[in-house]
Image (cartoon, rainbow, N blue to C red; front, top):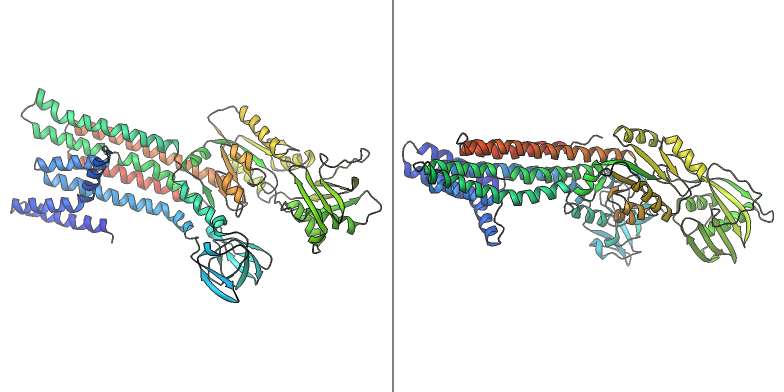
Length: 614
């Protein structure tokens, strides 16, 4: 039992004995009630006085202090204790609600590794993760959390990545595979070479994102904050007028009655329900999203998600699997054989992390001799220029490689044209596959009211249209460089029908970073371990599932709906209770029930956002 709970229990017992003592001894009654008042109300009184010193006068603590001290001064001790007691019960309920809303985020915060086992001088040292250097070998035992991003050098195991992705399926890893900090080793003993220092690791970037999310308030939250600052001084003035004007003008014999009405008015006017209901809703929404492996950087982005009517997609790795395989190798230079041709291409593509480059290295199957590589230069949106084995290799699209005009190449896949020593030598066809659930996920988005779906791709027109038609997308734009994507996005933005609606861009967060940053809502797909995704996007989906976009929009809309319900309900009940208290129909007892009741109902309603449809 916490301190607040103990104080409430003690005060309640004293209050009960005080009410019983009323029949026998008034002095004992007053003493018990005053002790109960101090026990339960001292934290509120202290906060009010501290805030007055800081010139932050008008808040709920100030209102409760005036109302209850006023009741004590005029001898209404039971009302004073009851108001403070029920207020603290409401605050306790509220803190419990915040804790529950925080739980999913707190679970995510548990991914922070507490130590790392580093192999130094053939001995294992257990140190802080931020003390491990790049390139050092760490050992992860069964049941331990992976402390840093690394590549397995020895052993095989199964990882639990649910804290990062929201998915409970185990992930098999073996030598040569990358592992991410924050995941849990569930079976075998593994050793791995550190690829990122702690400050640059996946887990640290995610934790930083979550810790800063609460600071980015939505428009609704900012509006409520401004409203409460204006609202509170007004109700204090109205309460003062209610206590003084009637006795001074037409009812001089009933000062106590009008003061009681004014105190009840103050209790009812407490802005707790307003102040807590909207932030609680948004905080709960962010927590619900994070438990599903969706990281939302703040309430403002959650609010924007709810207003989306247009979604623009990147193709590779977003709508398609991003797993390329070489389908065909065609030579144009008869002096070359396929093995020699493929070797030169593999050497040129060696340093690139692009899925196409990886597919070529996969097809080559041999170990690349780095000594054969003299120079590699990547040209965004076009391809690669390299000098390998003293030969100049140019690989890319027709914007980079001069293809003989007589060649009419029309392949269903990504075509890489290859020039060796300024002579066109052949081409390689590489194909990607559409994600299995992509078509259904696009349909689900349209069922949610997404009126326009667009695809922007650097791929050729034939491939782009094929994917767009297969998925039922509304528009597709092909052969785009990264800068072209930003330009095309601006065009779509300028021609949208409803200016109040938002446009989201979904990409992998690397090549698409400029568009992710420009969009109303930038959504990074499959961004686990991607630095630029976490930094450039507003919403980070830790897996590559399109279904998570559907979930994020549902959560956002549910959050907004609950926030509006809370605001409306609190406002209506407050107005009614204020009128009744001013007319003397509602006493301080009814006033405190109205205030605490509205707060508790708003909190209970906010709980609903935590229920996420899987």
